[in-house]
Image (cartoon, rainbow, N blue to C red; front, side):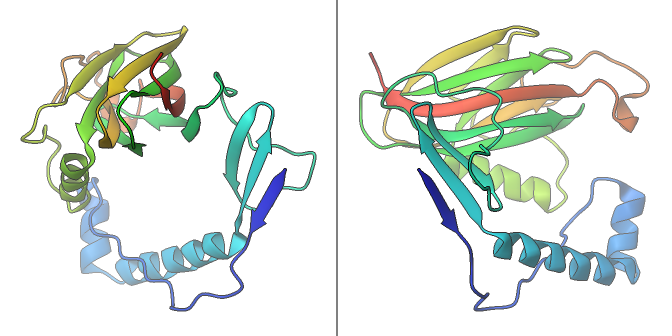
Length: 222
């Protein structure tokens, strides 16, 4: 079954503002020159185009899949892993690249009832990294600080779960959780978790990223 959704129009104009850029020179240009105006204007145009492009949901015997844009049958959304169990709700399935001294936020993950678990299936390529589970409120506050230009540092609240990620093999972890909302943070830094990326003088120019293909699902705890 294919379900398509597309906006007929936007009720309000799209507004996009770049708050901070990690590179100091680019951040100065953004805030102190006409480059900032051009960036925000162009970004708002891209965002409007994406919002108006709609999305497609596909339901099949292999589970549910979601993608931005309109897919025409028999095309399917690209996903790194297929559904792995009956009765599970898909949260997200994608591939993320996380560079050295960076983190990536996956979620939010909603656990509605007791007796449910988060199923995290992944394949990690590159240096060792780890996954850290936080409550959504703590993770959102931390993310907003980073987006505003704060230096990367761990949040005041420690993670409820710290999971070192195996490299080069497909793994699935089942994490039983109480009802609530959560965010899974992929850490490839030396400032947050316990797994540190290997030192390399070229880390600053983007070498040694970790590439994580993952599928997040919520289902009953057996």
